[in-house]
Image 1 (cartoon, rainbow, N blue to C red):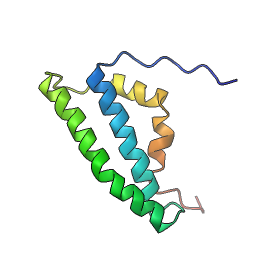
Image 2: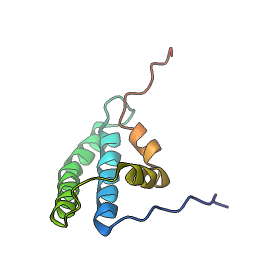
Image 3: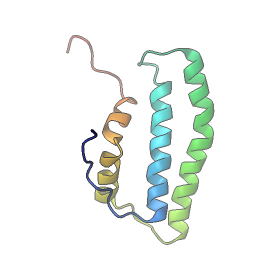
Image 4: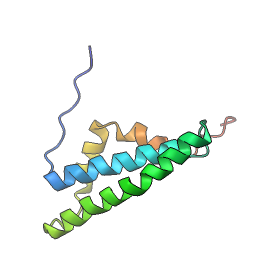
Length: 101
């Protein structure tokens, strides 16, 4: 049985799109990360997909801006990222700790 997750905070449709596209980009960057094990083909495919996902993120931010949502509500968006497993997903983008640490 899956644990009950906290509810996703109330987001505008544009904020939800930004969060989704941001996590798409993060997932791809995690697959490309040369400090993580994997093959070059997987990284190549992720890098190719990154172009279109970065454009989708840009478009989502542009939509927010056009709608007058000129400020990112960092606390709310951070809560949404946590609910959507953003901490684990973004950790794959960083350099892993040194094995001697």
